[in-house]
Length: 88
Image 1 (cartoon, rainbow, N blue to C red):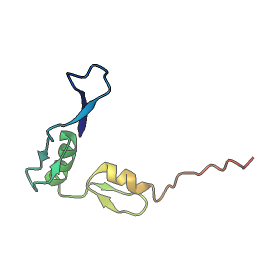
Image 2 (cartoon, rainbow, N blue to C red; image 1 turned 135 degrees about the vertical axis):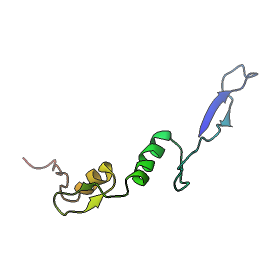
Image 3 (cartoon, rainbow, N blue to C red; image 1 turned 45 degrees about the horizontal axis):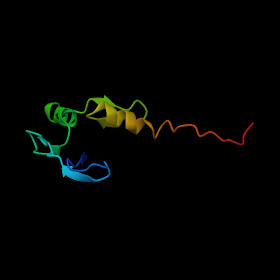
């Protein structure tokens, strides 16, 4: 991640330099996987707390640990309708 900072001695306001921000890392206490955002770590750690598969596809029966993965999977059964600009 970069931040653009204006130099103090620049009168014209045209000269900039990049400054590196310190990278925050959030580490899973179960498997030491690293995340940049605490929310992503929280969602990931839920998979360790409930090892059983809890979300099942009502069409094919495939199971998932996370509901968002099930929602993504459903797109193979319900493809989005493509609109044809030339149809009347």
